[in-house]
Image (tube, rainbow, N blue to C red):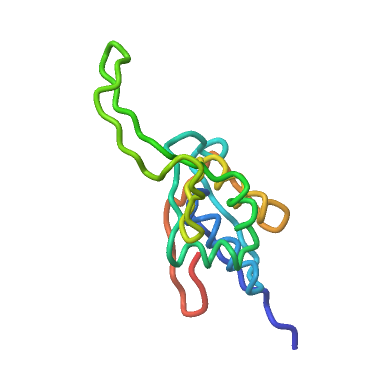
Length: 141
């Protein structure tokens, strides 16, 4: 008797969706990701990884790439409309290495790393969305 391949549908191709697709594929599921946008949604603010997310990135094999592309903020400058610095906040001293248990990367960097992990193993359907679900005794369609 042949076992039927289990399939899963993931709604959304951002961090949570791509991470879910990675782990579901790693466990043997056939994965389809549906994204309402016509491509990956790029842009946005930087992303912080710390605590459990650092360990997850390590287990996914992308921590070294995150470390290589990390932002290394030393000082924040708050400027007025004339581009004059009104206030400065020192995050760490010049030359002081960034912490090894927390990472900040551009959103696009993390998105690209996650997409590259799954793009060959997962089916992507862009410009679509989940409209409805129907549950039976054996599956959800």
